[in-house]
Image 1 (cartoon, rainbow, N blue to C red):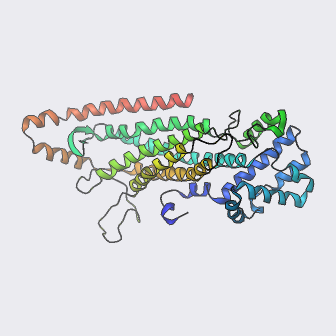
Image 2 (cartoon, helix red, strand yellow; image 1 turned 180 degrees about the vertical axis):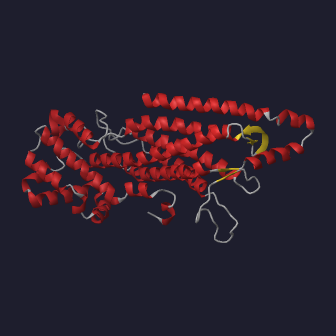
Image 3 (cartoon, rainbow, N blue to C red; image 1 turned 90 degrees about the vertical axis):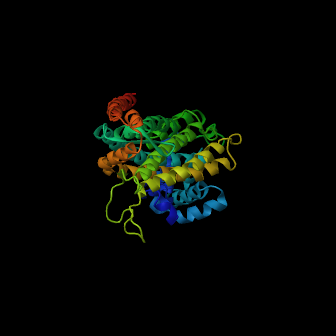
Length: 402
């Protein structure tokens, strides 16, 4: 991982997609496959035990497997080769049953689903933190008057709480949609060479169900080697979340400019300083979220562009998708983690907000000032804010029950 990538993501997501974690996820698939096949009588129990006991990542040279994947055309090929060698050291008869009836894309797609599940848990936890913080600000500042801005210019009066309610609404909707998309997308992949599970005969469906259950993934009921719609839908939802976070980050960075100085990110030693100008307070959380918002659209577009795939197995498109997927998750978690950490401690200067209103109001003719800057506008925004917060909370509760 590049030095320029690392600080835009999180250590946890970087670890979820690192080489060792991915190889470990592939080995978990192979172990689950062997157990399931033994349970339905497709392979001997002794062979399954030998395979399972060999599926330990510490037994493998992960760096070598990764190096050999380029020449092989798939990381699964050197992995399966190394696994068969390990199995053969203890039980030569079990080698023929290793990876039985499966194919490279099965092990790789299922491994990606496993590490994505882990990354999604991180994303959802931080998304909930960000939502809770914004709902708290919306209630606390429901009637705190501030200037609304349209076309980058001061307009009329709103409230900071109303602004926070507007920020949080897409995040609540995003969390609900991500739950659905995740449930639809995180499925085991098991189809064999051309998706028919031919080598497993009438036992294939039961094997797939058992593998899914052990790995805590869904069972789509069929192979999805080149049917990527549910998978890409999850990527699209992540892109929407990143965009919504980027909008919040952009507003905060503008409100934190010295000339405006209404809302600032929290400060702490070593955060947001400048190497040359000690007076600066750089909005680093907003920076990370905005960087993600710049990059995520390209990742999502690449996933969509890779959907037309040839016949039963893709040549190039699936491989391109694989390369883009971790980058999208890394950016998404970097964005939501940065704002989840910053939003609870936002420094809201209500006095400055009122001063900016009064300064602009003083520059207008009295009739215009009375029309556009009556404080009742902020009070009305406060009532709307509280109603919207209650609506969002009830919507989220309904989705949880569903």
